[in-house]
Amino acid sequence: MCDQNQLAEFARRGLNRRAFTGVLAAGGGAAVLSACSANGVTAEAEASGAPGGGVVASEVAIPADGGTIGGWFYRPGAGSHPAVIMWPDIAGVRPASKAMGERLAAEGFAVIVPDPYWRSEGHATFDDFADFAQNGGFETVKPYRDLHSPQGVMADTRAIAGWLDAQDAVDSARGIAARGHCMTGSWTVYAAKGSQRVTAAASMHGGGLVTDAPTSPHRMIDDTAAYLFAIAQNDDAKEPDAKTALKAALDASPAQGTVAVYPADHGWTVPDSPAYDKAQAELAYGAFLAMANAL
Image (cartoon, rainbow, N blue to C red):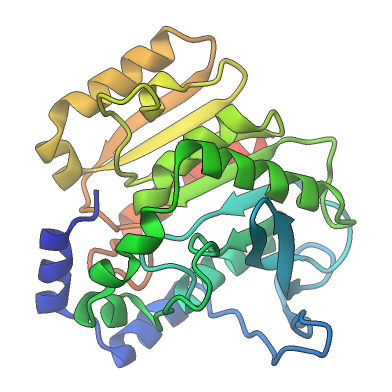
C-alpha cells in the first residue's frame, strides 16, 4: 500500500517534469483534452490507433448520490465496445492516468477514468506524481480519502455503470471491467460486489486487500466475477500472508482469479511513478487485457 514512508522515498528519488514527459511519451502518449465548452463537456479530441479510426476523448459529468462524478471518457471513434472503469492511484487524475485510459481505448475499449475525489469540491489536483510526492500530497488527500467507504464505492460504481450503459460507444451486452491502482485497487472488488455489470476486477498494487474488517476485500469476492490481484514485491514483503488469504478466498468461491507477486515495487504500473517498471508494467497490462477481452 502507498504510505507516507513510500512517498518520502519517492520524493527523495524524485521524478521531475522533464523525466515525467519522457516516460509518458515512451508509454504511449498523453491524452490531449481541449478547453471546456459552454455545456461543461470538453470538446472531443482524437488520436489515431483505435479500431474505427482513432480515440475520442471527452470530459464528462456523471450524476451520483450527493453530487456529480467528474471523469474523462475515452473510446474508439466508431462502434460499441466493452467498458472499463479505470480508477487512478492516490495522486488522482492527471496526465499519466488520462494517457493510460487513452491507451486502453486504443485497444478497443470504452474507458472511463473517474475522479476518485469528486466528493471534495475544489480539491487540489496534481500535475504528476512528483508534484504529489514533493508537495504534501498525502496530507492533502487524506480528508478526501476519509470520505470513501465500501458502500460509497459500490454506489459510485452503480452510477458509473448506468452512465456507461447509456452511451452509444458501450456494448452493454458485455460485462464491465474495473481496474484500480494503489488505494483504488480494493475499489475494484467493491465494484464487482456492488454491481452485477462489473464482471472483471483487476487490482494493481492495491492496498488494504486483506484486513480484519467485515468489509475486507478478500471477504467480498463475488462468485460471478473474475479477478486479478497484481501484488508488488515490497508490498508482499510487508504483508506476506495477504496473497495466501486472497488465494484462499478465490479457492472458496466459484469466482475465477489470479494472485501474482510481480518482481517490481509498489506503483510499478503507473508511468509517472518513480517505481515504474516498464517491462513488468507491460506484463501486468497484458494480464489485464486478457481478462478484459474475455468479457
